Image 1 (tube, rainbow, N blue to C red):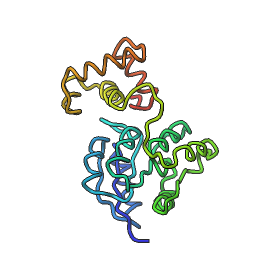
Image 2: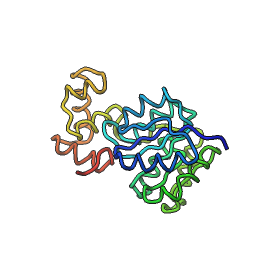
Image 3: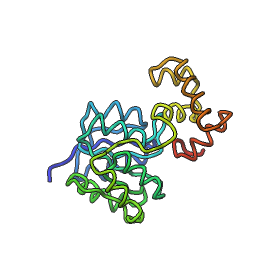
Image 4: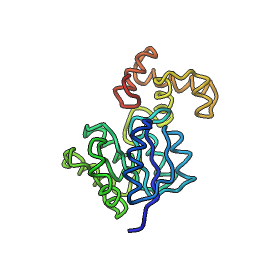
Length: 216
């Protein structure tokens, strides 16, 4: 099999370095980034065969990034390499368009197999998560890669929510998303109304519960 072009995204530089060493034994690492928005910028430019990404990333989490990546680079295979062992996260990852899902603690032994599997058009799920939980999801998502799940918030609302929870101010969020301050305020108010939340602290708690940000 020819060497695949791999783009990697993780906000921990040591993890990135370790993954890069593993991948370079068989494939070509064409880039590394440390947040979800940098990943969205790099992927269309680099056109990788495989993208390795984490769920918890600053500015834009991996799940929401994946939903955009399947439209930006539909030929790229997405493999999540994450600490989240919950079947709920794995289910959301495959619904978002992932072809593979493995845990950081198993990456050394499984990463090569996962990359080979997805390049052959297969799905790869770490044996550390019960496959029975995901089989209905994989069948239901066949041909519907990246379609949003029936969640309460829109993609833009989730982007605003994550940035608010990370401590970014309204003007800064507007700059990051390239929208007006009024648009950010509109989305924030809509989020609070829809979720019946009444403070920024409530928004942060909800974002943590949803996996949009990590609990510090």
